[in-house]
Length: 91
Image 1 (cartoon, rainbow, N blue to C red):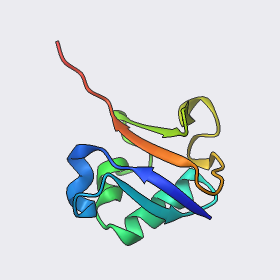
Image 2 (spheres, rainbow, N blue to C red; image 1 turned 60 degrees about the vertical axis):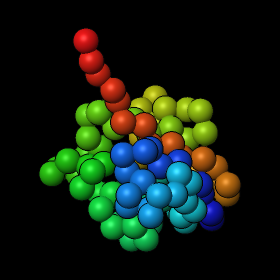
Image 3 (cartoon, rainbow, N blue to C red; image 1 turned 180 degrees about the horizontal axis):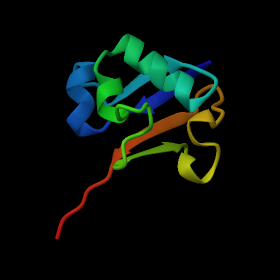
């Protein structure tokens, strides 16, 4: 099923500048794997060496943070939106 991924500014160079791309998958993990297959370079920026999402990467399906649901196993439906949100810290 087709899922829309919202790509943050710092990662748009991987998608030739596109802010939105379409991928396939039934879960967030499958959609992110397809994102990596279509636009290489995302995996190393989203996941740590152990295969876990990096600490400062937040993923939302529509408006729901996957950390409070099924995590990477969160189901996605046709035309759902996945947003990749890098956390910003400062002082």
